[in-house]
Structure formats: C-alpha cells, structure tokens
Image (cartoon, rainbow, N blue to C red):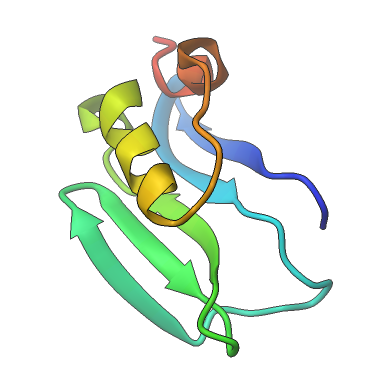
Length: 89
C-alpha cells in the first residue's frame, strides 16, 4: 500500500474506533504495539517501522494531537477535514 488512509468503524451511526493505515509492504502485519496517547496505539511491523495507528477513542482525538503523532513518525500531517469521519454523529 503506497498511500495512507483512514478506516472508521461505526455502531448505531456513531464512530467507535478507527484505524489509520500508513504506507507499508503488502501483507505486512503488526508485531509490536505502543500506546502513545490515551486513545491512540501505534502498530509496528517486523522492520520496526510504524504501519498504522489504532484510534480507540475517536471522540477524544483532536487533529493537532493526531498530527503531532504523525510528525513524530515522520509522516505528513492531515488536514482537519480528513479526520471528519471520526466526528460524525
């Protein structure tokens, strides 16, 4: 996968979890996780590179917090509108 993308899981019309897929090799799986903020868990592949970010508390995550984590991982920041699916009611 060459591009990052956000996947959101809804229950009764509300977001309950999300996953931000980072660029990775096809079939690469998580071998280690690291909790970085309340509501965010980074998944790492065998190479030690971050391959995704679990969003366990969508209502608690702000764009600035998420972008800070992305910067720490060497990833480009997101526009606030790209996180809109986490905010829908």
